Every structure is written in structure tokens, then in C-alpha cells.
Length: 422
Ligand code: HEM
Image (cartoon, rainbow, N blue to C red; front, top):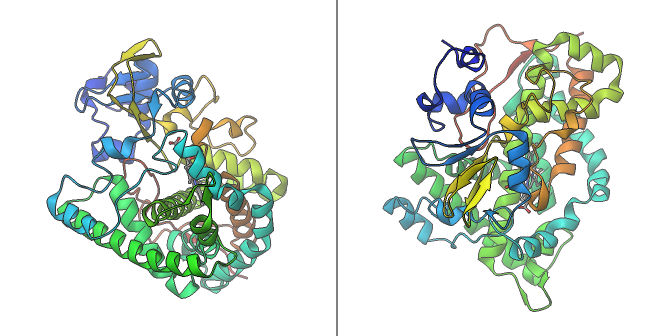
């Protein structure tokens, strides 16, 4: 029996769910609904991790960074898989993991963030729009005559990857390596890989570090007009330059945060449009709806479906006592489907008046640094895809799209579409 029934009365109890069960990770809708209905702040009995599931409690938690700390990398094994000796041995050959933006608290978080902030202002992002449009057209040109596409690999991944690679000053011919490194970080973050998978990820991360350490060295000596030069030559409070490990941590966050999430949002958006032709027709008739479409897609896709926090001292959230030292999971995807904020939350409605109230980019001091960039990429992508892939629909030759099992980042592995060709 589905727990969608359980929410409305009869039964599968909360204790039957384990948030780390791959089936729950891939389809958390029932579990999230049950949490919101019965225990919006819930100590999961299998793992001891506090699940924070309602809109109100997620917002309350992110607004208290001194209690709900982002220094979770240490608590989760340094983020290097250090608990696995073979993985630790590979990691040791590289630079140590350093907490910078996402994995730091103020004042360090603010200091690191201010160094890269200027690269992501609305003006800098707007300046990139013509480049994004050209890139979208080039990517679509490559498959337009086929009448079919695997959208994730042929469009949704290369778009943000190319944009951020250019911002970082990485040449285009290195893009495939760039993508492999991003996958290595995502595998590490997802914590679902087996021993072999963790070793492969650690090797990729080492390769990433060696590649960028060399570029950092070059930019130290001869700065160019790119983010790497800004980061490596920035004065930290007039005292010193960032060291290589700190720079690598910042670049790593830009690489992972900028690629996987935006690619997932674009892919899921096209799946939603392909399976809701009536909504697609609304947007086609009124392209002014595209910014709102983007917000609604972000709400339903929630590519960063959960995020860690470490609780620094005894506290109370949603009436529940949480002891200091606990680990908590902010369930952004659940907050985005909270029926007390979003009417008929499961419905895809491109005209939803409060779609932009989603928490897909987080809130407060860690609010996504790349939100403007991601929004602009998505707007440009949907505008071009709607224009150039008429009547896009799921390909009948392929099965249902599959979600990658990853604890934090949620997205389809592939999306096969067919469309009309003149
Ligand atoms: C649809 C795309 C994206 C989604 C859904 C997303 C989601 C998020 C979320 C939820 C957070 C907050 C995490 C927390 O509260 O702990 C965050 C932070 C961050 N994002 Fe994004 N992001 C996206 C795109 C990007 C892009 C394009 C970049 C940069 C190129 C980026 C860079 C960052 C960074 C550096 C942080 C950490 C900021 C800090 O801690 O101060 N993100 N993102």
C-alpha cells in the first residue's frame, strides 16, 4: 500500500522508512508527505539523523546558522571518504579538504564568498546571456535534424558545464575531463558508491586537484580576466593570499554546484513540459511565463533535494528537542511540496502565483551563490528548446526516465525526447 494512503489515514508507519533506502532516495514523495503530516522534525530511528521536513522548520533552521552549522564535512568523514583506508591513501596524495563556502560558517564563509561574489552579480550574468544563447543554438543544431535527443547528455549537461568552464578559464577541449571530475565529486557527495566507486571518485578528485593546481600557479604569475585569477590573487582581509588547498575547495564547489544541479533542473523541466502538453502550450502562447516556469520547475525538481547541518548546541525546532552534536538533514524537496504554502503541491502549474517562494536555492547566508546564473541558464534553455523542439514528447522507444540515487542531489540519469522536424 502506498503511504500516500497512510497520510490520509491508514498505514505504513514512519518507522518503516529509512531515508537512506535507495527506494526512498529515488522517490521520497511519500516519506516526505508522511514526515510533514506526522513529524516535521523527526529523529530517524535507523540513523539517528534528524529529518527536517516542513517549510516552516526548514526556514527556521537555515536562519540560525550558528546553531545549524554548515561545517558538516568534518562530521561526515571529512568529505574525503577518510574512513576507507584505500580512499584516504589516494586523498593523501593531493591537497587536504578545506571548508570554504558551502562547508564553512561565518566569518570564514563570508570571507571566502566575498572573493567570488563579484563573478556572479546580476550584471555579470546578464553579460553572459548572448553567449548562452549561442551555446544553446550550437547544442541544438547538433541534433535538430534527428527529431530525437537524449537531452541530459546532449544539452542539459554541456550548457552549464561550458558556461562555468569558460568562467573558470578552462579551454573547451578539456570539457570531457571537467565533466568526469564533476561526476567524481557528485559520487563522493552522494555517498552511495561502493568501495570501487569511492576509489574511482578519489582518483578523479586527485586528477582535478593536480590539473587546477597547475593553472593556479600559472594565474598567480600571470593573471587573466577569469575567476581563477580573481580567487588566487585576492587578498584575504589585506593579510595574505589564499593557499592552493583553499582555492581548490572554492573551484570544486563552483564546479559541482554549477553543473549537476542546473543540468538536473533543465532535464526535469523538459520532462515536465513533455508530460504536461497543456502547460507547454500555455508557455508557448505566452513566453512571458518563462521566468515563472523556471521557478515552478525549480520548486518541483529541487535538484539539491536535501542538505546537511550539524547542530552545535542543544536546541528546539518545531517543538522537538535536538541535542547538540546531532546531524540534521534539511529536506528542501519536502519544504517545496508543503501544502500549507503551495496549493496542490504535486501539480505542475506554470502560472503558479507563488512558485518563486521555493527554497531550492536555500535561504539566508548560504543562499545559492549561482542562483542568478542558474536562472538565466534555465530561462535561455527553455526559450530555445520550446522554440526549436516542437511538440517535444517522451520517446516511446525508451522506458520511464530513471532517477540517479544520490542522497543530496536529485536528477534524472537520461531523458529521451522526440520532436517534430519540418
Ligand atoms: C538549479 C541550480 C542550482 C541549485 C538548485 C542550487 C542549490 C543550492 C542550494 C540549496 C544551496 C544552499 C545550500 C545550503 O543551504 O547549505 C546552494 C549554495 C551554493 N551554490 Fe548553488 N545551486 C544551483 C546552481 C549553482 C550555480 C550555477 C553555482 C555556481 C556556479 C552555484 C554555487 C553555489 C555555491 C558556491 C553555494 C554555497 C554558498 C555559500 O555557502 O555561501 N550553485 N546552491
